[in-house]
Length: 173
Length: 193
Image (tube, rainbow over all chains, first blue to last red; front, top):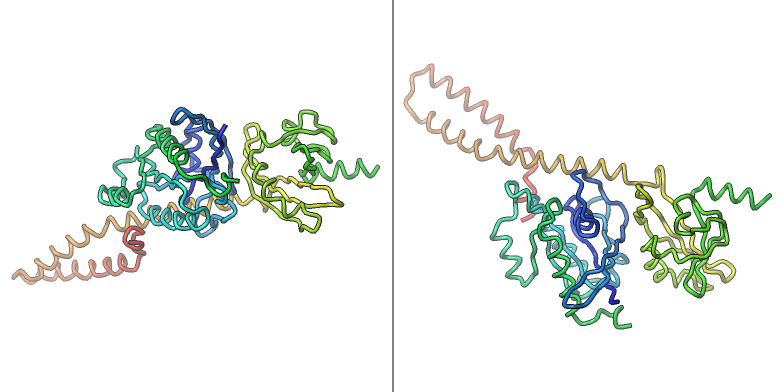
């Protein structure tokens, strides 16, 4: 079976761990538990008629206290760039992480995940910002780890993109 | 005697030493801490197992540990990794080293001051509260501007002296409020555009 390393990248408290918990275990907790270190989960995804084992690296949120390390990103085949739709500043953190990811892993596929779609009334990312991302050619998916909206779609979109992308240097070995 | 002593010592430190074998399995060289027992179903030292399944991070550690496992390699630590064991999520660190040609991994559970989770949890909760406060302060700006305009139009109006004094008092109070609002941090939205 094909195996792909996928990293969850984003600022703190954007919902990376909740998205993984929803996707892998179909669970959600309202309580915010800050991630320290890296947590790795596995899930088999069927996309384009092929089964792919995703090794999902849930990496702590980048902030003043913890910085994402290059060693954590090496060998990844793709990443989800998670943004909290209710905190516009997390979009800037996501952009910084995107630059870092490209520097380390090269031009691997990624999907921008605008999370917390269930909190529409507190949304700070307007349609203009949304379409700017789309115009850049970025794949953007709105999700809610709480309701499950868009979560499978985000991971499947990334999986398809990874399967159709040229192999990374690690995969080519 | 020494084995017993070291057995107790390893248990007390909540760490285990495993050897990476040429067939890809791990051999336990110390008694298994409780959190490692399930991975090594036969808990006693000497058990061999493929623990990558229980601890997926080891696959990456093994990949990265090659340099440390060379005969001239120096010990290298990896992690921390969050690993669910039962109902608990443990924080683990792996250190790879070569001892007399044997490729070893020290797996230790980070606890107490080494476990930064409670501290970071509090720090991030405070940061979220701070962001929320800034957002609330920002929400005060539009009504403050409306009050400015109203006071300005009242000051421009030809009012009786007693009402004019009231407007002046309102103006001064509002100036103090504007000054306080101006000294608070700008909302992150505008700060980072």
